[in-house]
Length: 361
Ligand SMILES: Cc1cc2nc3c(=O)[nH]c(=O)nc-3n(C[C@H](O)[C@H](O)[C@H](O)COP(=O)(O)OP(=O)(O)OC[C@H]3O[C@@H](n4cnc5c(N)ncnc54)[C@H](O)[C@@H]3O)c2cc1C
Image (cartoon, rainbow, N blue to C red; front, side, top):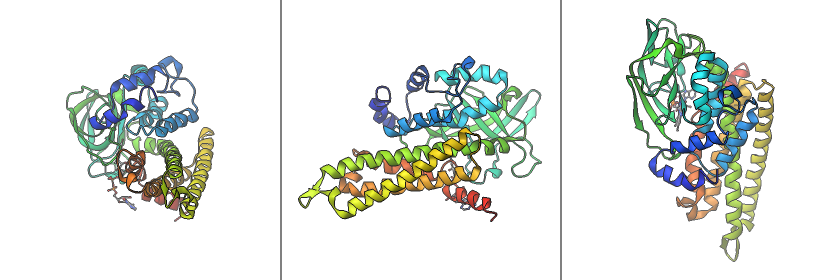
């Protein structure tokens, strides 16, 4: 991270996208697909702690543009657990070497929280699917070579039924990228719009079972949310570390600003909350390793830690005074970058709906 990412991140922020070379470098270092079987070029160890370590190290240097978490924590399980042998042979070696960058496209202009309203659709035509529609806010959207697209494959089924996952590959006729979206944070991340106009997707690119896409999504969302929570805790720890250093050196009224009781109490409170968050997320990771992480525990971890991340970043920015508002101070970027954590992966309001439902409400 220090050698191949940190020196370039500011340039990638200006460019709005990371260099593909960093993916290949990560592949060489064995950072992509640690849980993919060795025969396909992966690390061969299914242990989510490797994913968490990588998420934390990326967060520790503030490299918010790297879409490795999306690739490793979110897309990988679809390919390793649902992919056919033929799909695995075709995609996983590139997935692990960094030559095949992935994305997952659920959200649409008219369907975010309410995924059942997905309008992107595909109809069978011989051995192919003909896919039409559009997606938005797609992480790795410009760099992606393989996009798992959530599409309605049964027009007569209502709601959650009748959705499938189709793997759309770079270069397929009718597959176009829209804008690399201009965001307030995550400046080096290529979050994009995608358009599909009668894209001919071979039936061999159906991932998982036809019309069971929603079930596949529900099965994989707890790991996605745990990954977001792990990043949130690491982000809290990083910004607290930066701020502690700052308040010890900055002087006002003849003493370090950290020595005012208000600053001391505030940092004590935020450090306590962060320690509690780490303990809970670590416990969720342990549950996940045993295959026992419940949907509601993952939702609790996601909403609580990302709310905390925003609270910590905001308080720490304030402790920096005017310097906190300057882009050259990393706390300002932490404040902007962290905001989206409460929005994607299911908004925090949706997380509370999930927890509420688990209470029988
Ligand atoms: C930077 C970024 C990256 C993203 N990456 C991806 C990606 O890779 N793939 C992908 O598919 N999507 C991605 N998303 C999309 C993201 O998952 C959605 O933005 C999110 O799910 C919310 O959907 P929406 O934007 O349509 O908001 P809406 O669903 O319109 O929600 C608007 C507001 O209404 C609230 N709301 C909605 N329903 C309820 C309810 N039932 N009860 C209470 N409140 C409710 C929401 O909480 C929110 O506050 C990304 C988004 C961003 C910003």
